[in-house]
Image 1: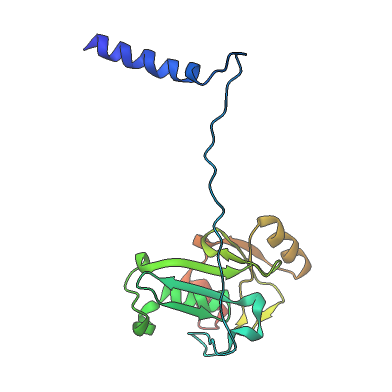
Image 2 (image 1 turned 90 degrees about the vertical axis):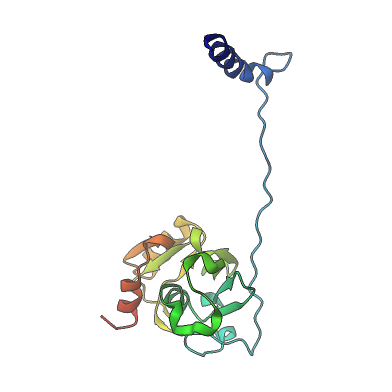
Length: 176
């Protein structure tokens, strides 16, 4: 048993040696991941699930959720998207029963107008910019962009996706 453990330790210690070249330089192995591309394919007939407003009129604010069952729903703002995210039972026809039913959540980067994954976005609370849904949470792909926006438009706080709460959404909607 001790020989097996000793052999395993020697093997583990020798793995980095296997990565060395003849010039005694360590070769770095990296896996190259392909960038994930997100899209927001809407037209003049696409309406916000929560507010029934046409989403094309305010492209800086558009968001969508793709459900694992194949359905895609659009929103006129991140606030509307979060409203659905926290209370999907209000819209039973979409078929969301638990958080695991959400396949992809996409928001528009306010600075670049590019679709980005919402779970990796930064949201600015308390700015002077108003969405079609009223006071809202503009989304950004980088913290730096969110900071610049917050400074220019008097944003109070920058939040990650998991820092946005149902209580905050209710506050933005004037329900607290």
